[in-house]
Length: 230
Image (cartoon, rainbow, N blue to C red; front, side, top):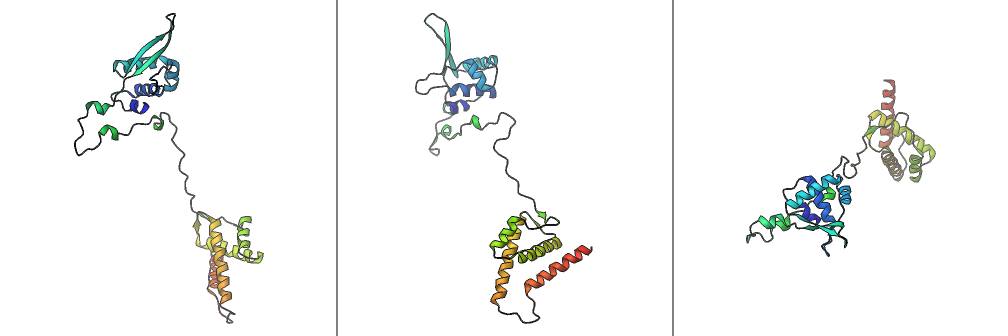
C-alpha cells in the first residue's frame, strides 16, 4: 500500500509523506487503519496541526475517508482511515496496444521513501581513497616486519643489512615513489634471492667477471654518493 501511495500524482511532497505513513499503518487483511495524530506527527516529523491540514487535503482529493469511532457512551475513541487510492495510470491511460504486452502502470518503478534522504547526512559510507605515492623516507631502515620477510626468504642478518643499504640508496637516487614500500621491499628481496640462486646455478665465476646484479649495485651506490655530494 505504501508503494501505491508514492505513485499518487498531484500531491505536494509533505502531503505525500503523510499519505505514505498513513498507508504504512493499513492492514491489508482487515482493512483497518487508525493511527493516532500524535503517531503520524512523530513519523512525519511535523506538528499535529500540519498533519491535520494535509489529512484534510487528502480527503478533499478523495484519496482517503475519515470515519470517527465512538464508545458506547458516545465519546470518540479514534479515527478510522479508509484508503481510496487507485493506480493513477490505470485511470487515464488508454488500453495497451498489441505492441505493448503489459500496461505501463505495471512497469513503473515505485518510489521508495527509505531511499529519499530528507536530511543533510550522506547516504552510505564514502569510498576509501587510494594511498598517495610517496618517496622512501630519509633514513629509512627495515622494520621488524621487513626483516622477518627477508628471514623467511632465507637471508642472513649480514645479507639483510647489505640489501637494506642498497635498497635505500637505489630508491633515494632514483627518487622512486610507491604507495606501499613494504611491498616494494618484498619484491626487492625476492629478486635478490632469485639472482643469488641464478649465480649459484651458473657455477664458479671467472676471475675478474662482474654480474649484472653487482653492476646494478655499484651503479646505485655511485648514484647515491654523487647525490650526497650535491
